[in-house]
Length: 117
View 1 (cartoon, rainbow, N blue to C red):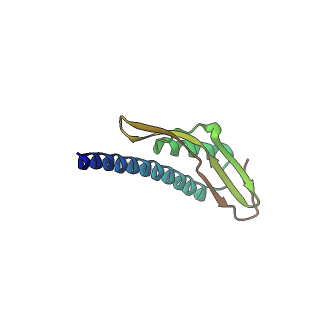
View 2: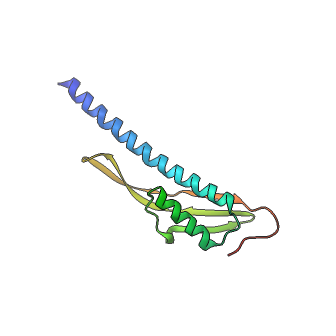
View 3: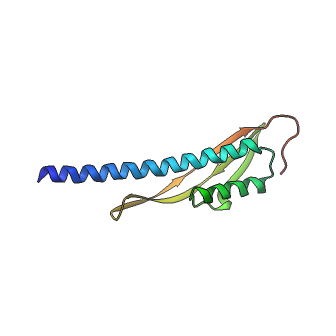
């Protein structure tokens, strides 16, 4: 009986770790895709950047509200901070948790031109 309980507990832990890792990997992939988008068009207006972020959020199934995309500049750096809460099912039918992810990315603006607001 002890062996069966140990196996069941181990399966729950392995499932929870796998699902938590998948959620974290999806968040990292989304953050990386936003960074790549900024690299290809760093001089885009705020509206275009938000549109790009929201399009990527749809592709990565990220429940992001456009109001939670904050764009700012610090010196010659363009910063994009995002925040969203996702329900991560750690053990299907047994345990789920709401996790708040806060991906952020930045890129350096080169040249003297500046960026459109």
